Image (tube, rainbow, N blue to C red):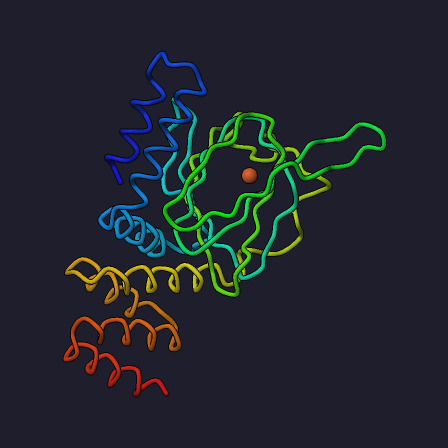
Length: 240
Ligand SMILES: [Fe+2]
């Protein structure tokens, strides 16, 4: 992940106009999300955060001088947030499954929002929003989806200063079950990338997961190493 953060920093330190920087950041995001090593590093970053108490989708990274953060958001099935407008730019990539991003025009009289674009994006695709673009994100699938973001901040300490919501942030507690959803995505990503690192990550998830997710992790381990997987299933059996 360090290379990813350094690459963001390098782009933002160029004297390129903002639109060129945003295109470079989008390309970096797309390139990264298509690399298996990067995907596993993201899972590793999720797991490292879980070793601290009260895990609630923390930032992966925050650069205090350039005032940007990197964050993964995991979207429950059919979840849609309310339209909102960041006061600064942001770059979004789809890490897992699918997302639909809608952008809106704010009409004056009567004051209302009108959809001007709806973009469906799958894992590995990325885009950027310029300051002031009103948008929202929807997970159109019956499974979890996940996005990776680079956010620019006006005020990191008071996130409510960074965005205007229409009409308000959706009152759904995304904290509830966030840990389990993150583990679920971690297992799914590791299941698709079979190598030594993904096996290690699956074992780490297995060690900290609740029983049902242990079974999923054990199954993914079994697909790579039947002997290890059988051992994990036997361990789960003792919890049943
Ligand atoms: Fe947003």
